[in-house]
Length: 270
Ligand code: ATP
Image (cartoon, rainbow, N blue to C red; front, side, top):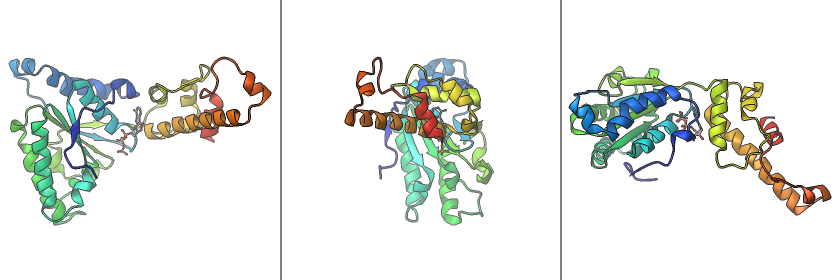
């Protein structure tokens, strides 16, 4: 797998993220502007949290928004997967934590993103045992060295905040908690719209109506992405069928042929 601490500016834009407006505004205040105008914040002596925890059900955009924040700020992004960091020989995990933070400092401004951060921070004396405990202690040491890492922001993501050790949720660590909810009906529409960008969508398709339908209740962003993909696949397959066996009708079809139509969404939803 990719070596830890590989950094680059992600290509996810705000417009790729559907809904989550409140989070976007918060991240604008807490990260994006501070990276863009560091001198102003220094001049006014503003001292704000640099560590965040995104929590909530799976597939609702935690990774996506973290990448969009980095893109918007023009910052590097380092993606760490909690369980991968844990799956190492004794002692190697702690070394990896030190290496990761050192890389983050050298490529600042930088967003250091810990996916499934609960794996690294389970309550001491519980599930993890002493391997996790040593790793957690190393992580706390690095998190507390915030003074030495100007321009480095830490974002953790988890579906299970309740298993995390309270110590990591303190200010200066993953201090600001942000809930990422399942989308409501309007937000589902915004997500489908964001996902349809650059796709040959038929002009007749009403994505907001699809988002309102009973079949879409309780779908996450990841579910909606799968739905969009299935509809697109149905449209592509229909196109091939028509090219391979052109009927008289199909051959004379005018306008925009082979778009993704409402019928393709219906098929994908059944
Ligand atoms: P997990 O907790 O499982 O890691 P997550 O909350 O980090 O999930 P993401 O990885 O950000 O979820 O989302 C998975 C995919 O679902 C995204 O790549 C995107 O295609 C789609 N998606 C999820 N939420 C949104 C959203 N708000 N807007 C647009 N697409 C979304």
